[in-house]
Amino acid sequence: MPQNLEPDAPGNPHDVPEQGEAAVTFIGHSTFLLRFSLPEGGTLSVLTDPIFSERCSPLPFIGPKRFRPPAYQLADLPPIDVVLVSHCHYDHLDLPSLRALAQRDNPVVVTTAQTGDLIRKAGLSRVSELDWWQGVRIGDLEVVCTPARHFTQRGLTDAGKRLWGGFFLRFPKSPETPSVFFAGDTAHGPHWKEIGIRLGAPDIALLPIGAYAPRPMLRKVHTDPVEAVEAFRQLQARHGIAMHFGTFPLSQEPLGEPERCLRETAEWAGLAPDAFVPLGFGETRLLSR
Image (cartoon, rainbow, N blue to C red; front, top):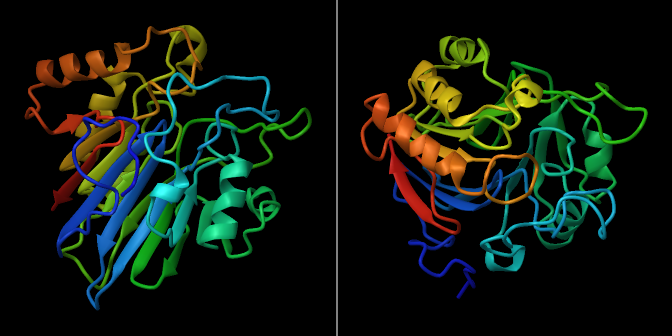
């Protein structure tokens, strides 16, 4: 049995969704396990922005240290088929985690343009780099890279040299399978509506809500909970799941504030009680179209 460090969270990362469902497991920060039942049988497992390290930093002894450990370790998860890496920041592209995935599963990796060199250093060779609106097919799955409002820098001399973005997942041959939009790291902006116009309303939207204070400094790169609710509405998503909160000390808002603000804003906006929520750390939720 996998060891969940948040034992009260419902569900199990090995839960197999029925046809027409997706299983979403929140591991922490922007790391989710997504599982889909394939039409011809079997299950596809996708991992987003995997980070299992204690710190998000180029060095293991300095930099932002976790408030809490990952809800699951990689060893507790089923084999991973596909990994999504939205951009090169250390809290989203963690080389030790990618090395572990390379050794255990050797998954296909989909990332943004000019980011593949970092991922190949981790021993992963099956890497697709996408520009905005480009897509790639992996069996029944289609992954489309979507715009975001952010930036990239990993060292002293590479600012802006690698792309950032999100990903839209869909199954063209299996329209009953839920589509998933993973926003990556992004500020609020007109790209939400453009994504909906070009790709349609996602069944499930994974949207960032944390690391927003002080607002004047972070408004241009991170979405706050109020903006996330507006993004959810503009996308016309069926289900919203919060991410990018409660894991690393990246900003000045108090621990727990993003989730509380999201719940209050969603209620004020008239959303259904479970329409857009933060999952518990380690929670697995089965969602359908």
